Length: 147
Ligand code: ZN
Image (cartoon, rainbow, N blue to C red; front, side):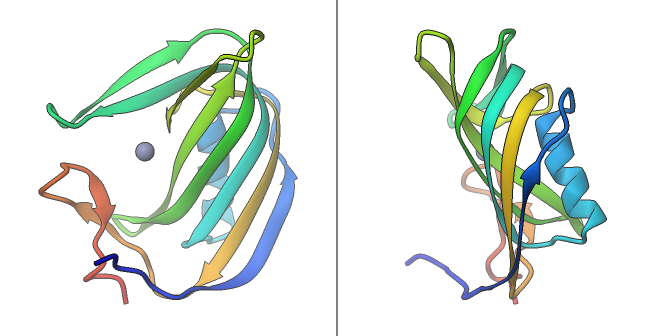
């Protein structure tokens, strides 16, 4: 059965991100500076280039690929939780090129902001802590440690 916790929204930030900055680093830095430990993130806009990941479920290794040209962010959704005591952002993104065809994947360092509008919804509730998951090989939320 799904393991879920009840959270309460305490604050919502909305604004624009820095032209030329790295998208995942910009989001992570904002969370660190504002001590955001649990949140939902949404971004739309455009990037100058992108680096995305695909998790190979057989080898249990991330494969990364680069798209070295401008793209629209048609959707970017993510969350903030704790790993090794530090807030980390986990986000997935769908990006479209000039022909409207889309790429998608796990947002990686190497994705450069052209212009982005961002909303961060901060939650109050138990800490969500990432730990190694034996079945998937991923650093998933350890719901037994979430209190
Ligand atoms: Zn991911």
